[in-house]
Length: 231
Image 1: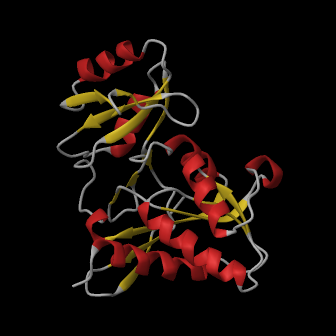
Image 2 (image 1 turned 30 degrees about the horizontal axis):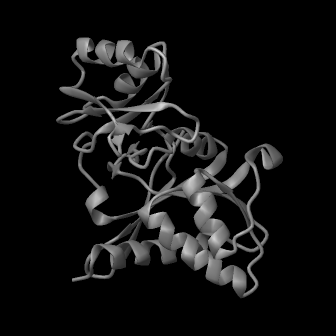
């Protein structure tokens, strides 16, 4: 049985094969993407010519350390592929993302990509979304009003302001994150629509009909590829 990091490494290394020389692609954020970045950095040192659009300041730092050239989404507009991690993936390809706090940029980059490939270990592949808290990015002004409105709607059982070092966590864009705890999310489309209708909500961590493929690492060493139908 492999360790969690070995499983993630297998998925990340496998996913590197989706990136071909000459590509400009979206580069996600997270613990599995870390291994993708390491592998792509190695291939760049061996002659692979690529440019990446990063989804977070963390990814910028890791990519630069690995020697991966970076560019800005405004310079390319559309991407053939983006590769990112997820906190939960269901059999329909619906996702919860944003546990690392980069959900807004991740969704912008994913929306600009023709294909979104999700890499994760097998623990992230679930029968139904909702055990992992759903991140909701909100502006700082009036966030308690947003928090109360979500609670009053009764769609989840708890809404917590994310903390870091005893202070509110702030995103790269200086927003707050409200983590919404569900038992399960039976209608992700409806939940996403309701949350986005609230004034002060910037974006949610629900990624619906966006993922094309999932690359899942298993503890027996296998790497499984799952293709989803997207609109």
